Image 1 (cartoon, one colour):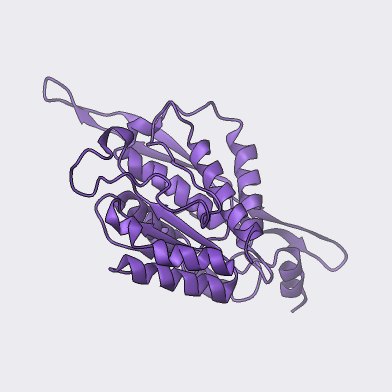
Image 2: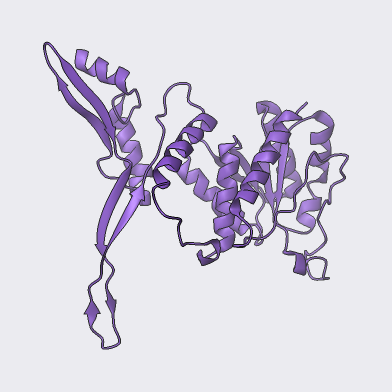
Length: 296
């Protein structure tokens, strides 16, 4: 089929014109549309193929306007109709043979930055979020994923719940790429992460709560440093004012591991509108970069 071959070469992404479009579209419906990420009819070829001329291109929807009614009842118990519109901006990259997480994320970020630049700054701030810690953690985890960290070992705890929720969300939005394993014993989690990093040559991340949970990672941290195996340790500490106050699991864990065994340490501040989220993203990026550069 000449026309089919032409379209595949024009845009090889499976869900657009490439191989197995039905399977690709079914995947999108299952993992995007049902998760409230529906962009409608978002792509397809437009044009004609004639006997003596051809004019065809691929259109990809980058925005979707949704009209809806935000009705409310006033003080006189009367329903007031308030029609509103919402603009959703979409940006993505075609996943084909040879695609990498870093390359696709860079392309997507560039596209989204160009489109979003035409809109005024959002009035939404971090503190407006229902749970600021979750919003902060979500941005932090997604930056780790963008940097190539896709394996997480989570030790259950109440203080690291926002990080756990962010990782779970990432496993849903990065199906088959990001993996999370729950490990009840911190010492065991440390060595499982160490084994993954040793085998794959890139860091896995361990996520723990505060207090003695962190101390249980010391053996794996020492072995990681001695063998030159990259490893990320993410611990959910208490805010400054609640540290080392005698209550349960409030021991001072700032630089709890000797600098002999740690490549880099960062005490990331709690979420605040006075501190840009880019600070946490920069810390995540720098941690992964140092772990990879100093491996071995």
